[in-house]
Length: 190
Image (cartoon, rainbow, N blue to C red; front, side, top):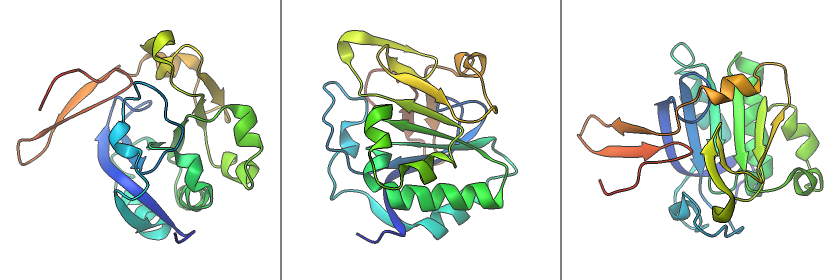
């Protein structure tokens, strides 16, 4: 795969349940971690989704900068596309004052061992790390399970900011279909 492109599952231009304020959310495609009861199993296959260049993806996100507070990247597993993730976040950081939040199933120690991780972390304000564990489910303050850890990599946000994020939201698209998202997405069918 092109290192200057991300394999994307879904883009959502305005969400309130994926970080502080109104956010542009990128769900990457592909995850081999296999957390039981993962909220987003449809993002696991590597072959799914759409490949978008980091420059084009940044351009799409930056078009929303007057309407949003920041960018959230979730998955799938963003750090399994670490070079492209870093390229995308670097463009966002260089061309805007948008905040950045990344969900990962990797632990802090695992991320530290990934080549290029130190550079990617420089472009992240908040990192939520650790595999989801259904037996430790809490679904609050953007933590799906109590074993996950929040790393504030800048002084932009605090734990209080994350506590104010709604646990779930239902978005209604122009065609009338609905999309559920958040740390505790509502159960049911569309």
